[in-house]
Image 1: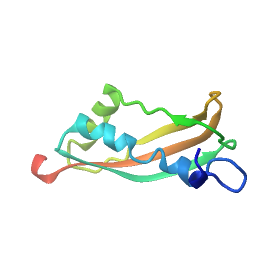
Image 2: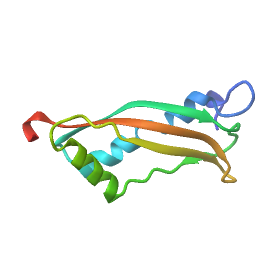
Image 3: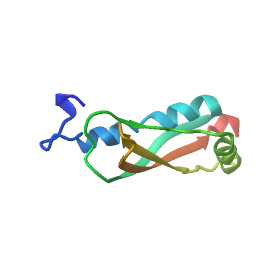
Image 4: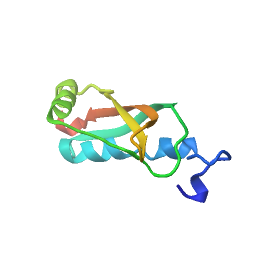
Length: 112
C-alpha cells in the first residue's frame, strides 16, 4: 500500500484492487493461443469483502482445460466470452475482494 492507492479509511482504494487484476488472464492466454486469436478483457465485476490493508495479492491460473475450452468454442470463428474468478487476499490469507473477469476471445479471420 502506498499513499496514492490508500483511501480515506486507510485501506486500499477499491479501484486499485480492481486494476491489479486487469491484464493478467489476457497476458497469460495470449502466448498459449498464439497470434491466431484476439484476446481482450471485456468486463469484470468486483465484490469487496473486507478492507484490504498492507500487502494484498491475487493468484491467476491457466490450465490446459481452459485453453482447450477456448479453442473448441472459437473453432467456427465465433466470439467466446469465458469467465474467470480472481480472489484478492491480504497477507494473512483473508479474502479482501472477489472478482469475475470476462474475456473476449475470437479466432482471427485469416486463421478461420
